Amino acid sequence: MNILIITVGKLKEKYLKQGIDEYLKRLTPYAKIEVVELPDEKAPENLSEIEMEQIKGKEGEKILSKISDDTHVIALAIEGKMKSSEQLASDIDKLATYGKSKIAFVIGGSLGLSKDVMKRANDTLSFSKMTFPHQLMRLVLVEQIYRAFRINRGEPYHK
Image (cartoon, rainbow, N blue to C red; front, side, top):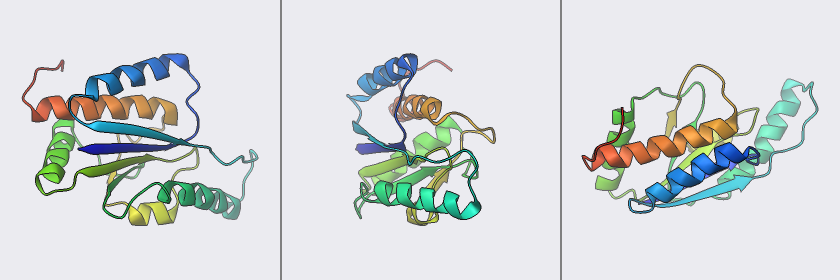
């Protein structure tokens, strides 16, 4: 299984980087995992709707350039589907069973994801109706991917 995490914006907080690195290390026996950090577009505080769409569009082009045609794309979005850890594990297991060995999880910038990225997505995922910093969601995502592999292998992991 090849998992790609595409994220807009730089990870700044050391403690988040340490947590992410720990889960990436734990994931090595289960999957090849790569994190691609794309620069976010600079934006003034007060944006018009058109300016927001333009920025999301530029970020979306960068995101889409990293995704191959044979990749199953899961977009993280507040309006996405809420799933339990077991449901996410089952989804990953089904993808592997049906020959989808490339999965990309996409985390957009502070404005969210472009319409083109959402159109390209095969599925959406939301961890909560609340808004979280994108850097924190990166940590939560890698932990949940790790948890999914542990669930699928029937291995113990704290609840």
